[in-house]
View (cartoon, rainbow over the protein chains, first blue to last red):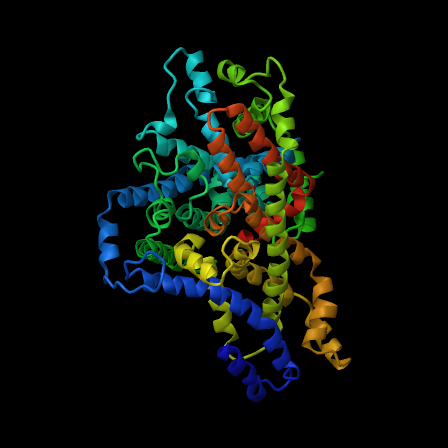
Length: 304
Length: 304
């Protein structure tokens, strides 16, 4: 709050032209946002760093200082290793499978063909649904007794697989749902990107006899690069937050094989009310997010 | 519905009027060959089937008996069991959880619009010391997921006495949406012609009058965009109500659906009917307002 006050006075010295009425607008307009944001975003983040050094159940004040013990325990936890691996896997699948798929579909539906708009809407629809609903729907699809997989298995006369109960398969089942739910979002980004490409490039290339692939390789891809970089950025950040969808599908099981960092935080920190340990997980997640976000922006998106 | 509808509402997606003209010429000039046509539609229909099949089986599965579901998950029900759906539709819990979701989402939208628009206005129009710093302060919020600070957030809400109240969910939701909302608003406000402000000032209109009488009436598109983003995020939010609410009667639908699934876990036909009814509002609204929703949900992304 003091920041705003000092901030408000400054233009009196520097701004010559537009200084009348500056103070009231700053005093009225900024504090609500600052207050809410500080109270519910910034302070909790700082507190997470503080609590992470304590063994604390959340009642009274955190008094049992244990230094970096929480982090030590965390980094030795096998389930957390699995969560890190899974988060990495989700990122890789998002980038290697989901984005090419989205790009491929975007190039198809951006043709002026009948039904293109309907296809776009259908492909985008899963993105609008809540993760929880998508997870539950696919829990049914994967169900070994009632679901579509059971039906497919019985059609081919093989024993029906219990995909979500198999600790080697479950994570791939989850990855499938992730692609199903999110490719439409990336496709929409690419469609917007494709529309901003000047069509005269294609005309010129066609006159020079460029093949469809050459046009894609030498015009579409380079001109779409900023959109692709952005899309990868969203995949990376999004994959770190994955939680809602895992809960209805597997809840992180079987035997922790589908934990992500956030589901791990939920089952080991929140449900057991280990505020210190949970905060330590939050801090690690925060550091990873910030490092990846800034690192990525620095390296790949410098000019965008 | 033309090809352009989807992106039309999106201010960033490059002047549709300009992009439209040359594009039609290119693609109508050379007709697609039959093979290309076949490949295009075959691919699109396969992907559309993969997207729609789980949704349709869910909706139709809700009409079946459990036995029917087991032997015939794909096909139409042998006997249409309307009571699965009707029982849910006349139950208080269904309407109560949709009502809870609605209240929380509306409060979130109103508060987000008010607080973010005011803050963004000062960033866009008022020059003051530290404005760049403060803007970046808000933008940190875009970088990390809610989960990182969820435990301290829980303790803060508890200490404020807001645990298990609507406001206890609304305030953090608003706080975590502020970064994106302020960014979108600020960009829009900056594009309002500057002459308007000078003219208003000559007429003795201060910042606050200008905001109220000129900026807001001109900002309907961006208010809609930010409102939609806030609404959808709140409507689909799972992790915050999961941690900040603990009475069934206050649960929004993503929590309610999980509770329901827990109660009737083996009665898949009921669970499927319940899922269908809970995602139905989303799907109806999505198709009714698809232009705005697609534009809204990709707006932050396209801006980058």
